[in-house]
Amino acid sequence: MLKSVKRASGNSPLETVSSSLLSTVLEPPVEEGRLVVLDMGLAAPSTVRFFNQSKCRLHFTALIDSELDKYNREESSYAERVEQFSAALNLQSGIKIDIFLFWDLFCYLNKSAIDALMEVLSPFVHDASRAHSIGLLNARQQMPFYDYGVTSVDQLSQYPKTTFQPPVYVHSRRDLNSLLGCLSVDKSCLLADGRVENILLVNR
Amino acid sequence: MIGSGAKIEGKLISDEDLMIQGQVKGSVTAKANEVIVGVKGKLTADIQAKVVKVEGTVRGDITGSEKVIIAKTGNVVGNIRAPRVNLEDGAKFKGSIEMDPEDMTLSGLQAKSMPEPKTRPLDIDAKQVG
Image (cartoon, rainbow over all chains, first blue to last red; front, side, top):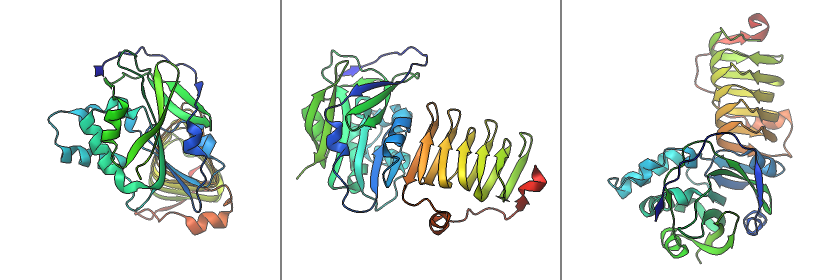
């Protein structure tokens, strides 16, 4: 299901929302070394503050803020999409990601694009990798347009975006699970404004 | 102080605090001091300093032995390595941030510093520039 929403411009203040599932992603300790986090958005000040006390490496890809249309083009081949995502993410080969913060990225990608994205990310997943994503409860809801960040283990920050919102794709949990490859939705919980948050864990 | 009309290409090394409002291509090193990239500053350069504050634009890697601050007007594309990193609301950053709160010494910075950028070696003493 595709929904297109035009968003008004203007700067709005930071808001916070409670999250029931974020702690599942953030709290399990890393046994040794550095925590590696991949955030698909631009760097949110709150996220950097949250991880400031940790020995960690944060990668901010800004993929959500890029021209997402190119990944959704029907005429693009699977190989082309994989190449585009690889170039955009530019991840160092060999690293393993502990935490993926997808935020609402999947809402702006069609099935073919998600499939290609997960192909690119699969080498960076390890047995204990976990991920957070945000989606729509159903196709009747409108997706609010935010930049997201982490405020605490049970709170998200959301910064209203002032750019044009891309078309929204609504994926059911079943659809998402069929596209996520090595990951699958473990739990979902309602958020405000008709959204759901998902915890993704590695398939065993 | 490097004024907004200045353009520097090469290696800029300083033993005192630096305020850059101009354009720099190459690298900026002030290991025991503070480097401020002012609102008008445009750097395509790697920066190494004790404290780095970015109010302007930087394309390059930033290493701060104490901390790195990206101000609300700052725009950085690159990798940051510092014990502490502060992003002010409105700051734009794309890249990776490596933080290690336990490793706050200058020797830590020197031991883990990023490779020297491949730029034409042109040493400039900041005292002469300011």
